[in-house]
Length: 286
Image (cartoon, rainbow, N blue to C red; front, side, top):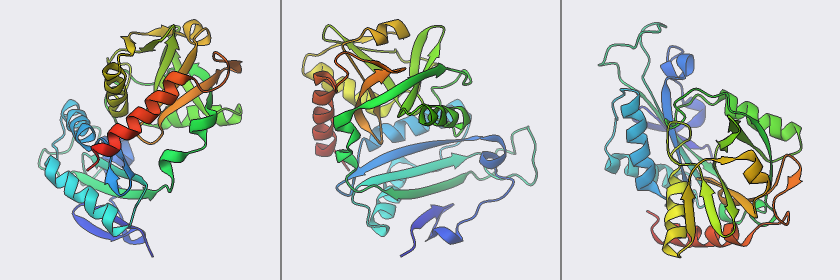
């Protein structure tokens, strides 16, 4: 059975889906996206993803083509049509397809391009790496200055993933002026003397939806949280480290640039936070 996708108001088999060669997302990376996890056929942290989508669109002076209720209906319809039990729903909105290529934005009445599709990931919450942890390398953060907008400009993060793969690692943490910003597709954390430390929200990092939910869980169980930049040296001297993302949830980091973090095994804080987050997110899934 062919996967059903959604393109500009129409549900259709993926092999029949097309967009214009003049689409601004294709030519200019002029678009934004969101990825929402699905567990047990239900959407995880959906209101947060809708809110961030709206913010990203506003920051780029793009119109939101749907209300939150309409986005929810589209997501649920795709999950149902593709019988997704565990997996992801990807959505992308671009500034649309003008008649020709131009750096200048197209007329304001140009319809946006809206694309959604699903990815089935059976056992998403039970991935083996949650038990073994990730090994990360560090790379210079060479991205543009508005990392808080979830745009489709993903070339450098993709290159970072490949650098990590070539080094036999699982991911890369990006470093700017000696301070860790975030992972290639995740937020970064260290734990020292029981304190969870993660970079504060700014233009330098993506405002992670899972980040927000995990920090809320941490504070509710009286864990100490410091939102500030931390250095690579601090990370190497930490008791433990971890990442959060919408598709990986909470994953311990056991080594940085080949050096073990703490004991070199998944730490208790990360392990507890993953369990707390999954329990809470499933309880409020839509």
